[in-house]
Amino acid sequence: MAKARKEVELSVRVGNRPAALGGVLSSIARHGVNVLAYCTYSDGDDLTVLLITDNALAAKEALQTAGFSCKANSIVLVGASDEVGAAARIGMHLGMAGVEILYSYASSSGGDQFVAVFKTTNDERAIQALEVCPQARAAA
Image (cartoon, rainbow, N blue to C red):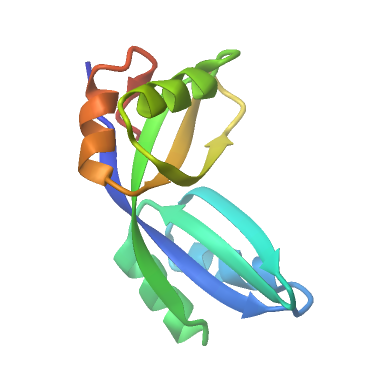
């Protein structure tokens, strides 16, 4: 069984301006970096974009070149079969292993696989727990 892996998530605060998300994503795309998953949320007047890419260093450089500042966070990235209840089973598996999930989000391309992102209080423990989870596999 394949393993989940530790990955880098970039957190980009972009304020509350029109087309901010498009600016972030197009800056990365122009540098040939693929976005595996992203999530946005608003905290008052500030929009934050959370990104997982296939090359965090190149993405960070692209964002900084475009005038964005970003912060790197450690997360756990796991892939799974895109079937009803798969994400719930992965979350339950982490919970039963005593792993506290601070937040999570997922992305699917519409195929038979999806990737899930987990920010936890103990990434190493999460990865160990997911090594024996039948729904989990290493994300592409």
